[in-house]
Length: 79
Image (cartoon, rainbow, N blue to C red; front, top):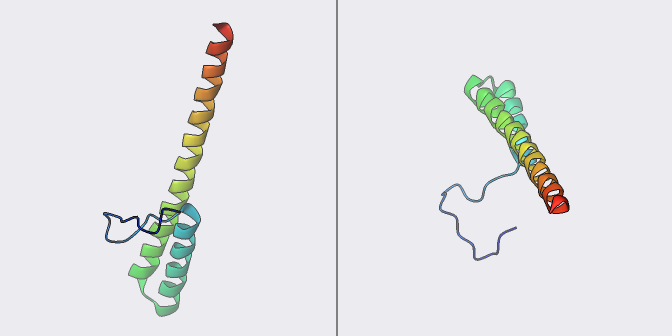
């Protein structure tokens, strides 16, 4: 969590995490389905996909960092 005095350039506030986006998307989908509002339902689908993509990207970054560390270890052992 950033310090309390941290300000964000984005007027929407701090970025949300993967699980928050997915939950928010599911809530919007349910609200849209209950009210018959297709736009809200579609917005919820997009929000949920955004959360899923954040998770996929985070996993890819973790794998890349692990691979880099492994390569560094192999190079340092050979030196």
